[in-house]
Length: 117
Image (tube, rainbow, N blue to C red; front, side, top):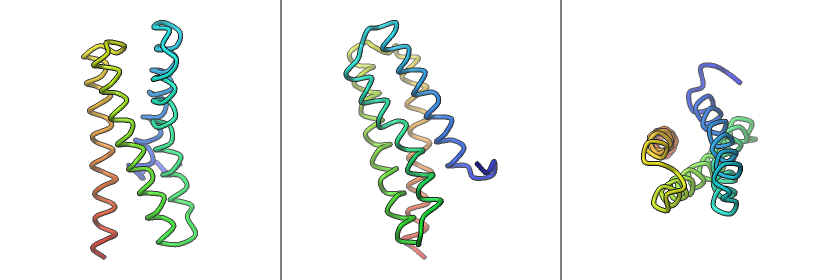
């Protein structure tokens, strides 16, 4: 992983956080369904970023980036659900929502740059 690729670094760090949140939700809160959805979408963001970086073409890069954006939107949704059903505290969810919002902005900015070039 290149340390100067901001979206790659941040999506990886976010995925690590999501795994830890999943462990907390399943072990401490005994929540298994919503947390699994969060785990899948939250770790998929970075996986799709990695696939985009290794893409065969510009179109391939953009397609994988678009999937990463969609997964980030879904992750945003699951975090809000977990907050509003009290599985996550307001403080826990706010920190996660700040991180996912930042990722959405970064990915959206990359998409916009590609569309405009």
